[in-house]
Image (cartoon, rainbow, N blue to C red; front, side, top):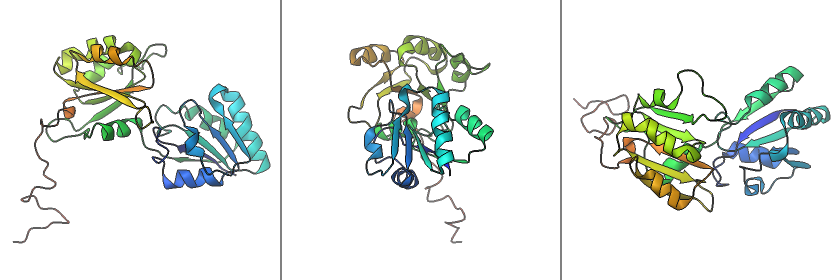
Length: 251
């Protein structure tokens, strides 16, 4: 018996890995985070027990996993996006290890990747940004020392900020000194879901645009010069003069 932590992707049921879909179709027990995972992801399952864990606390979830283990049944534990990012799987894994229950993690498409695809953007561009920082804005749960947004902003890397749309004015205030008022910003609401929506602007006007859309939750904030489609040089990878292992010099 194995518990499979499966990344279901950002919302579009087709953005799940082949392995993740196969396991959902084959596991007799399915526990899914119903607040973020659409039921369409489960389409075609043959599970004997299917539980939406949105209203369950950790102890109740672990008890379901323990009972499945006693019955010798594999479990598809389905999380949104990629379970390694804000998936709260660490505490579940700690309990499984304590109970001696085997598990495996199946990665998924991240919300940041879905947002970049929607915006037709590359998050790393030559001479602009070669680093992407995935973070969240700390409010009720404080950020660790050195990870406050103003600390991260000093790098001027591409930022993907989760769980922060309600604090957008504070976020803009912390980013302005490092990125400048003209820095491109996009706020994407429920990327890849049927009701997805987004706005693009700069740090100087993004608050007004988001307020007009009334985005209040389930939105990702992308910040960085990479969102300007013309502001970068071509990479060396496809330069005709650049030689490498698969394209050696003809001299």
